[in-house]
Length: 107
Image 1: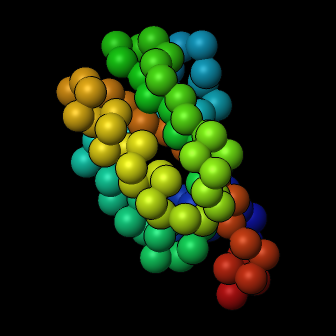
Image 2: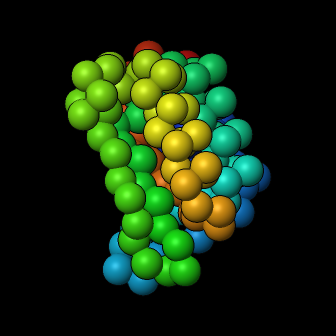
């Protein structure tokens, strides 16, 4: 199984997705959907390297795990960033860069 297949089947399989004009390959999710994705990422131990936000089709804030001196699999960094962003502005869409371990892919 590929990482893309794993994510589609196990992490964001039922969530509505959006794309932003200047970044069509990145899937963006609503606040509620992204919250569920973060919970699933924590459950599976999926690494999240960065989080991007967008509002009204325009790219917004982004954050990377190294900025917070945390491992990409540490949920405190990505849940903290998400909480900050959602409290900052309502209506954001969210995307992330993921890394699924080979162990999970080979299950």
